[in-house]
Structures are given as C-alpha cells and as structure tokens.
Amino acid sequence: MAARPIVEARGIHKHFGSHHVLKGVDLALAERELAFVIGPSGSGKSTLLRCLNRLEEPSSGSVVVDGVDMLDPRTDLNHARQRIGMVFQSFNLYPHMTALGNVTLALRKVAGKTREEADAVGRTALDRVGLADRAGHTPGQLSGGQQQRVAIARAIALEPRVMLFDEPTSSLDPELVGSVLGVMRDLRESGMAMVVVSHEMGFARNAADRVLFMDQGLIVEEGTPSQIFEAPAQERTRSFIGQIQKH
Image (tube, rainbow, N blue to C red; front, side, top):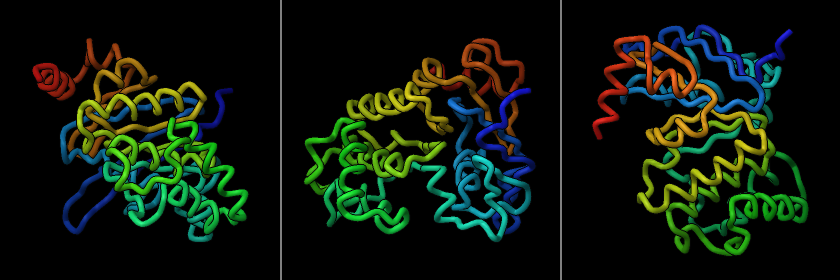
C-alpha cells in the first residue's frame, strides 16, 4: 500500500465573485516529493498554493496536510500552518528587525519558544540558508537574494513538513536567483516535500520529481520533467512549452 500523501487536495474550487479561478483541482504530494507547477499567468497557480494553507479560503473542496484537515473549522490555523511553510515573491520581512529577529518572531509568538530557544533555532535556520554571518543585519542591509533566503529561513525554522514557494525568484536580479535556487535544492536533498510555482524552467527540469501544467483553473497535464518538457501530450501544454522555449 502506498504511503498516504503528505498533502491531499481534492476538488478545489475558488471563486472571486463571478470569476471562477480554480475549477476542481486535485493535487496529491508525496513525502519528499518536489512538484513544480507551471502555466500561463492567470491560470490559478498562486491561488492554488494559497488555498493549500488557507491564505485563501477555497469555495469548495478538501485540503488535508500531514493528516490535518485544513478546512475543518476546529483546526487551529496558526498551529496547522507550522506544518506548511510558504515563501512568497515579495519577502515580507519586517524592515526594523534583524534577520534573526524576523526568523525568530513566529518561533516565539506561534511556537511558544523562549527567546534563547528561538535564537538557537533561528541561527541554525540562517546557517542552513548560508546567512549565519548576517543574523544582525536588517533587511535594508541585505541584497534581494539574501532577503529571500531570510524568508526561507523563517519558514523552515518552524520545521514544516511541506514548503510552498510562490514565484520565489521573480523579483530578484538574475545574478541573485542562483543563491535562492541553491537553498531550495539543499532543502530538496534534505527530504523536504515542496510545491513550487516558478518560471525557472531549468530548475524544474533538474530538480522536480513531477511537473504540473495549469491552464484556466485546471491541471491540464502532469508528468516527469522529461515528459512535460520534451513530449507533452496535450496541445495546450505543447503550445505553452513552445512559447517558453523561444525565450
């Protein structure tokens, strides 16, 4: 018998008023799996991620993360979200706090750790993203790539079972992208289950276990990177891959 998926979303619909953004999406993520979601702008990729951790409320469907029903009204969302970390396009760091302060805030406020405990965990997390020597710097003293790595450290400090990445490199200068992808690759090798929405197709080819192509609120096709990039079965997928390979 196959192990239970660490994330299981079924029949996810999302309406924003009359706009039907997600039209019945199913997504199962295995432990240690890296699933990469690609597709044109407006296809629902970011909304799907935000429904998985309930930053957006699905209009209907079910989401179970690590055995916890995310849509059950009795679920403690703050506690549940510790299982499913998220990194955004914008870093969302507090500008007046140091890198360590940003990383330890949720450890103290949500996970209930003392300052000493939180600082120890926070320094370990910063070390994992290669920023141990920047713990005392504020975001204004860091490059965009370093700020994004602090945001990743903040998420992994809570020891989530799953990480969601929503366009984590799209607001970075090209020379800074590699440092963030390097951290994501290290997380992947450490066994973190991950769902990544990104335009970094080289990373998708090299690091993903599975690539899902979304269009118009549905997962149109999914498969291994070689299947999706080299021999897509669906015309919509072929058209999208053809367009991105021209650039």
